Image (tube, rainbow, N blue to C red; front, top):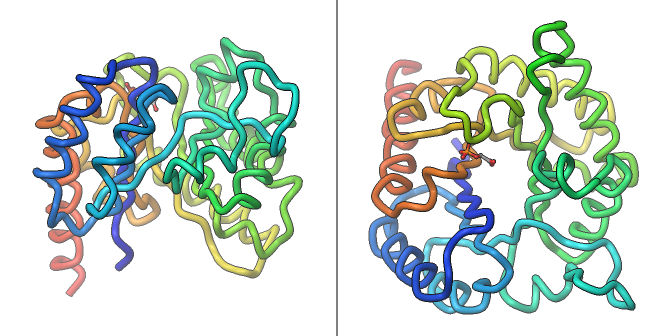
Length: 258
Ligand code: PGA
């Protein structure tokens, strides 16, 4: 079984001192965890956090990226700049960016392409809002977002993308999706990718109010490869518990299957 991918999205939190303390605590608590753990701090602390995760079991990611390599784009950060700092991952198209910063499906497609070209793994966020869910449009919405995000890719590039299914109504609300519902959407994403490429499948995460006390439900789902965690990733103990609970739940699943 592949190692699970657990990503902490720190959003606009943590100054230098707090970021160093959090990353150092996680380096210690997760040093032998057989998981791929990615920290996505704000741009301003990528550099100090890079120094802490270097030569550890943790990876560094950013929360956004521009699609151009360089140029007159005030306030933007190029993919190569993230690689230069030690980033391996980048979150693309988070719903907060789509909602508050006018990020469109076309922006997402360009960013995904540019990230892959620079050697970064894009973690593309997709998901429906509450009204879309009520109307039964979840899978249709996610399917469109998946197609749009991969529109600029060659088929052989597609398996390198990670998708995070994050229903908008579950983000920061304390109201998580049901494990089985999230797994059904993940299966739909994989099926769609299967139509677009024969080069392999993608990893799919669940995100939206993931906590230590609900993460086992997601770990038990066959179609989910990990989680994208916001609020609960800001505390070392909580995030450590999430990683450990995921690993334990997956272990139970593997034992049951034998
Ligand atoms: P949350 O955020 O865990 O605080 O709900 C998830 C996300 O926005 O990625």
